Image (cartoon, rainbow, N blue to C red; front, side, top):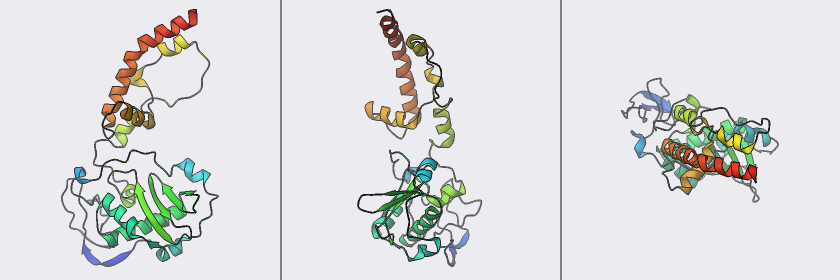
Length: 252
């Protein structure tokens, strides 16, 4: 569902901060042309801070909640109302106009009805989520009451289109921070040998570990590279003492 209005100038910005200027008739005021990245603010530093929470709507979440009934079909999306609170939350996060926010939130609903995780609260509200974006439906599924995302600047349409973030920490850096094979079960080895085999620079580090470490050490949670370096350095410094302790334990 792509809502259309009268032809007007695209209100979005290119990656370098220049206004787009292409013509479009899309209600979200983004032309979707190859030369326009669709940012609602000219520069990344003007965007809200990073939300430090676990992303919702993973493939696992989607698979485990498909049994949750949802009384909304794709062709009924336009009949679902969007509260002022949800529109304000969208505009605060991504910028743009109130009208554009409502249209884009409805697009999120349409896509999440087709594929999205469905979590129900004790009071009957339904949180629909996918890839770190989520909206909340009222108990009667007739109103979108809230919107949020862990993504620092991109809206759902940009994410779907594959527009990369302008912030320093994005997918290539995440891949590097989480470098190394994921953990797997192997044969049992003596504790001392296990500790001696640890290579901090090569370890697979989960983002939750980075988040927890940043809180413990009071490090800026948006600078994942610094968090990763500090964690690995501290682990490396602790390994000699751990080896000595393991050796003493094994001989006692």
